[in-house]
Length: 537
Image (cartoon, rainbow, N blue to C red):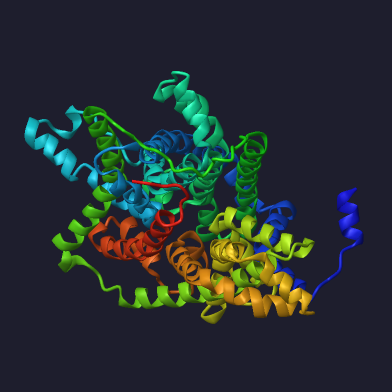
């Protein structure tokens, strides 16, 4: 009944036109892919994929998601609990060091770990030199396997769960924890029976984001030789030249992504906790005894060492050791700046449009934000496929400017919500009385958005623009599928070198991508450390 009432009372306002257009621009690639997957058959290529490869692609994707989920929860939640609730040596340092792996894409970590753990890598060579054994005389973990892929993706993506869990632990009721302590509950029991149930919705949200990113991965899966649906989509287009068959695979991947979203929302909807009036009281961290404190430091240090320090150090070592083998990447860097800049500009405009309508409730504003969130949840390969189909129907060839436009469109469709959210957060901190005052003076919704909301939203624009640029810079599968001929970017060049086992050449572009990713991660860490309520050292 409420929905019918809203529909009857709906009026198309001056701000609704730009918001509707922004949502439509984001949604079209997804819609095109879904229609193609449902309507077109895919011919003999699809029959071949269905009969020989589909089971492997699907099981590879589901297995990767399951193992990544288990590893991520085992690492991220204990780390978040330790740095939030206890004092131990290095706690303040680990609090932000544990976020840094977000800067490195999964495919960069895959290149580094394949070299570190390979037959001629430093670990296996040290074993053979120390023991005199040959490679066939001992067992060593194989990175080129499904567990190896899950391990790499866990290293790259666990900070999503770490951040949401830490936020939940900080903001939950202190009184509930103190009541449990007063009743004699041990630290472990307070964690399992009080803190964890209250934080479950936030942890589920972070885990859903982690798994959506894992499902979207192409570079790490392709390099480590694990068949996944995203790998199959790119291969169906590049190797078979059959977009209809790729659309069928994309349809299956979209179903998996939607299932993740619905599961997360179901978990969030059912769970919850009542907060007391002292919710934001200062968190009083417990000082751990020396032994326990050193163990906590060792755990957090090991996580940072494995997830970031070791692989990045290996890439630096390869760059320095084999500097004479490093191929020139100047043109790839310029191409990267052009493509990432184009995508970031379009995404920024769409994000600003959506943010300015977010405070003015309505069906169109809700549609625009929903489409932005949906676009982020859909893998880049799927969006690239949708853009490819639409551009083909419009008769636009993917060469030169046409390909750049298509890629900018895909980047915007995928990452607009990353830029919109910092602006929406900035608007949320502004007093609502500013908007009410503008309306009382007769300002139209459009004039209020431009004169009042725009200056406020721009305060969060720097963070949003930086995130958009870096996310576009790191995107690999969409760039591989749509880039102009001989138009390599840093991610494409790194992927090509790594595929040819030229890891020394792949090291420098991989490091440049990681270095660019460090900027928004450090900004995020700084904002978190200066905005949390009730936090003390």
